[in-house]
View 1 (cartoon, rainbow, N blue to C red):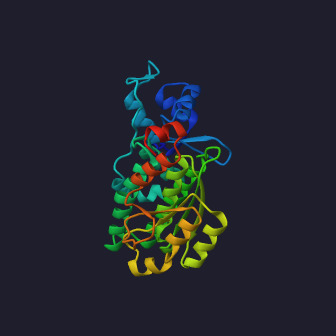
View 2 (spheres, one colour; view 1 turned 120 degrees about the vertical axis):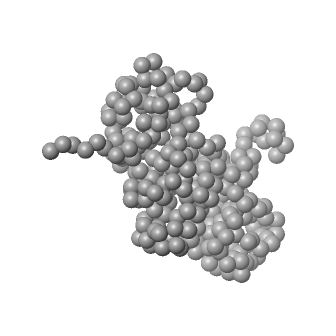
View 3 (tube, helix red, strand yellow; view 1 turned 90 degrees about the horizontal axis):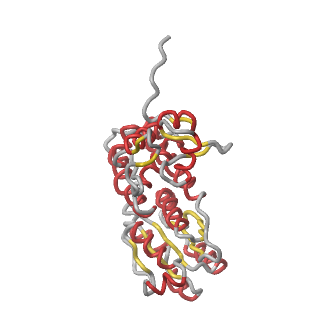
Amino acid sequence: MQQLDPKPDDVITLPVAARLLGVGPTTLKRWSDQGRIPHTRTPGGHRRFLRSVILDFRALVDPRAGVGRSSGPLSLRLGEPSEWVDRAHTLADPDRMEAALLALRASCASWGETGDAVMGEFIQTLRERYREGRLSEGAWRALRSSLVRSVLRAAGRLRPRIGAPVALIASPAADACDLMTALAETVLRERGFTVLEIGCVTEPSALAEVISEQRPHQVVLLADRETDPTILAGRIEGIGRLAVGRGSEVWLAGSASWPAVEGARRFRTLAALDEAAARSNAPDGARAAQGV
């Protein structure tokens, strides 16, 4: 029986990827360690690559020379996030989703920028297709779950700096913001924060108790435009005053219609949250140079 060619988005091993590139496994390991080629790892620690990412990379390098044609960082991408929806049957697999996500990250300046691309294009397209009946509820849930797991995997590989500030992340918007919460955690971890993520908080007293016990440097609250402003106001009532009293700063992030919160800073995009996090956790010399 004739063997069919693997699909472009198949997950492949390091030896197979190295053969496709025309380089040795050691070279490919070095490139992937440098962040030039996105990859994932199995529970046993073995590297896995997305075939389409390897083919994209091959188009950007000269395999015979074994070096990139440009000395600058290579930008890898699998297409716009909205195009991922057309490959929903494969991206429900967390390994393929993670490879696609890391390829997108390689083409962005930060996880903040990556998160905005995901929330603004990929999720919006999914949501529209689901509401129009072009995407089943099962596929919608599978893709969201796959993406959340992939983002959390990426977050888990980022380590806080020694003596880093602590950021408490919570969402008053039930589990509709699970993806935004995961992306915000990755943004903060990339900037060296220690992150305490407590998920959905529907009662102000529960959030107040955690703030009083943990006394985080930042309290990051997340919600998107789907959240009812009235419900939102009730769930964070009095949090601003409490946070100020405990020496914490409240950051409100996302496209929700947030109520006025005493002393809070407002960030409509994850990129803006990323910039604030970078300034807040910059080394002393860098903070002085930035006027922080």
